[in-house]
Length: 266
Image 1 (spheres, rainbow, N blue to C red):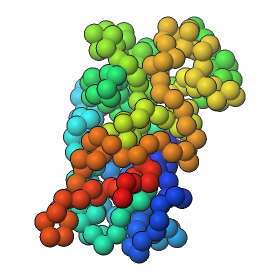
Image 2 (cartoon, rainbow, N blue to C red):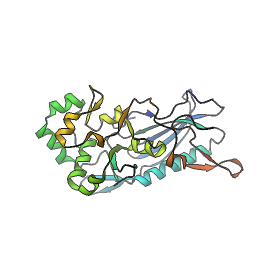
Image 3 (cartoon, helix red, strand yellow):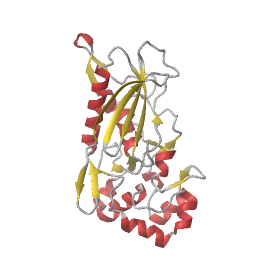
Image 4 (cartoon, rainbow, N blue to C red):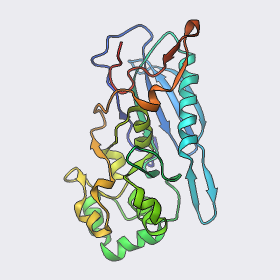
């Protein structure tokens, strides 16, 4: 995992689930150019790895975006492909990782309001310069541990506010890509400390969203999800995650990600 990736976040647990032979752990990594889905035995042995291109649209001026539905569709297809080759086992837990600064605004139900902005997109240069002029390099670094950079999530959100006011008005939350995927799997809005730190809005000393910086930027803290430890439970598999299915033996449909966000119902 390179420096642009958030920490792998475990959003399920295997501690309370009875083990069966051939059970496996599922990992989803949304990278800059490739989405990877992997199955591991509990001892860390890689059982299977499948991958697909990360759907990305490039436009002029250094702008690049990801279609959220195409992204989710690619992930769901990879999970179906992987699980079909491991049909004797169950995915008993999942971890999600993504490039750190990519993100998107969603409404209160988690629906994407526009394409996700890629981490390397350069559109937020003016917002980055605002931080330098109005807050200063030293204060931003003291609070966030980061240098001012246009690629951080808060600058992308400020760009949307300044250039797409109708979208910003409807925005309930800014989510990093891994947060968006986790919500589609589990129906819970949450991030981890690593991804939170890549927004340039997280106070690493207090482990909270920085009230000081967000007040300066004119942003509500409620625009950012709750922050969990990277090994925390988030929730059970629900919603679109539960709808990601394949054909089981005998033609029966079965959840291919049972227990992904906590022990599954048996």
